[in-house]
Length: 144
Image (tube, rainbow, N blue to C red; front, top):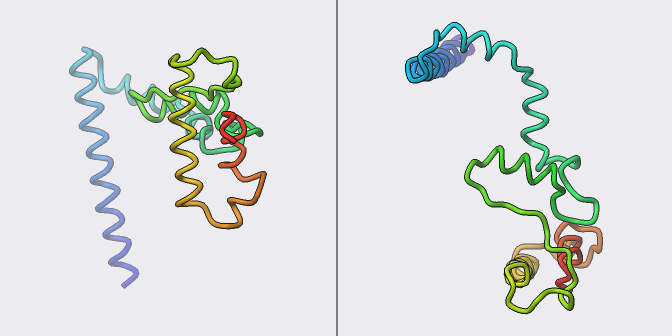
């Protein structure tokens, strides 16, 4: 049984490599370069560096201690999700925001969404915990 698992894993890995190789060949053809040059560039990429930077929005290094994401977290999220328009929090007090402004509308929309999530998706313990991520975010956006 174990031998079959190894064979299946080898077939899957070979298929993944073939897909990558075809993409590299496509890029080389589209940009008029040698595919070996692309392989050499890919070999110089430090995987650990790339992974840790790309996922900052999921780690504490990309999160603000007062709730939400910091600039590094937002930047890594936008790199991981091309086309994303994610922005940092509107931390201005509601009394200082011009009524009907873009920031005021973003804040109002965020507060409505997060309050609904807190009501319907958070557990009883999370709702009461002042240090939960959802409560920190609501405080940061001045929702409560």
